[in-house]
Image (tube, rainbow, N blue to C red):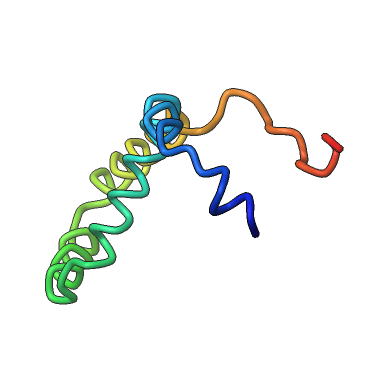
Length: 83
């Protein structure tokens, strides 16, 4: 517990942001989606539901492309294997 308080280095935060910009962007988008009004979410759901099949297929391709671009290039080793 003492290291959390005494060994905190806020200057590392900018390095974290520079190292993981895509992850930070997705977290921000997630928080913004969390705070959007319910009526807006219902309208978006209705638009997607009423979209033709080709539009839904294009939307899935765009989402898959974004996920592939954001995912990590390397598989991170399990944390307990490092000890």
